[in-house]
Picture 1 (tube, one colour):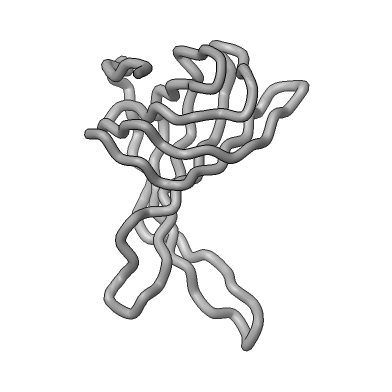
Picture 2 (cartoon, rainbow, N blue to C red; picture 1 turned 60 degrees about the vertical axis):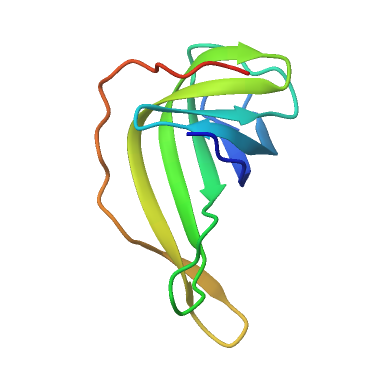
Length: 117
């Protein structure tokens, strides 16, 4: 499903790369997103997506996808999702904000069928 939402990413191997971008499309087994630089293929990464619809009480929702980068090219990457969870923004104090896990992790063993656009 095509879906353009703000996102952040972080690779897990050295040298770690952290950046911002947006999603291009999202499927049950993978996510395609823009990057600030070329990422290495076959490394573990985490992608955090600002969900486009808040909860009824205006709490922000964030999708957290963890997996392996299966396709990379200049300014784009595709992640095969191994675990997936949603987090909900919650107020901690007057000026603090924290995140609470909303759903349990879901294991993904299927191959990424999405493609880079």
